[in-house]
Image (cartoon, rainbow, N blue to C red; front, top):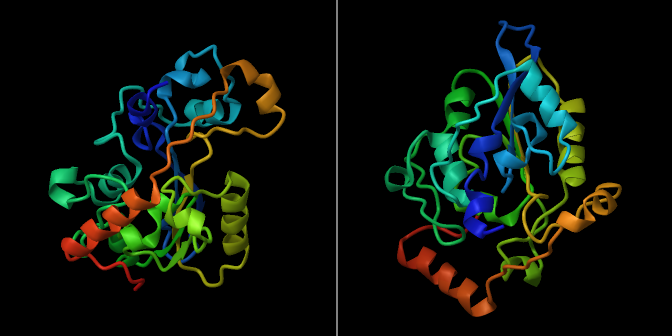
Length: 239
C-alpha cells in the first residue's frame, strides 16, 4: 500500500463527530471528534470491504451518516488536521508538510470558536507529528500528548503512543471533569500508521495482510526541518 494511498483518507475519511451527552447548563451537546490516521475508507467493512472486519466503525456508520465520497485536503497528517481544525486548504492556513511547518496563530480554529462559545476543550494525541509545537493546540484548554522527550522522538516524526494510552488519558480526563460546561474533545489515533503492529487477536487474524515498514527521517533531515522552522520565523518553544 503506497504512502499516498494510505494517507489519502488520513483523517477526513474517518471523521467521526458524535454527540455524547447533553450539557445540563444550556442544552449544548458535548462533541467528540475522533480522527484515525492513514485508514483507507475502502478497507472498512461498512464500505463493503471483505479484507478486514471493523464492527465498531460499522456500528457508528449504521447509527449515523457515512460519507463515502469524503476526500482529504492533503495526504499528510499535520496539514490535514490543520485543515480540519480551520476549514481552510493548506495554501490558506500555510501548513504544507509534516515536521517543518507550524499553524499560524492568526488562523482561527474550531477549538477556539467552541471555547469562545462556552465549551471546555481538550485533545488527546497519538503521535508526535501533532505535537502542540506545530500549532494545532490552538484553542484547547487541555492538550494531552505523549512523552516525546527522548532522542528517538526528536529523530522520528512517526513517534507515537498506542490507542490504549490515548483512550486511558481521555477516560481519566472525562471522569475528573468538574462543572457543567459542555465539552469538545478531540481523540487522535495513530495505530493504523506504518509500522503496523496490531495487538492480538488481530495480529494473528490478519497476519497475511500485515506488512511492517519504517519511514523515519534521519537526524540530519530532522535538523534541516528544525532549521526551516527557524528560518520561517516559527517558534519551537512551547507556549
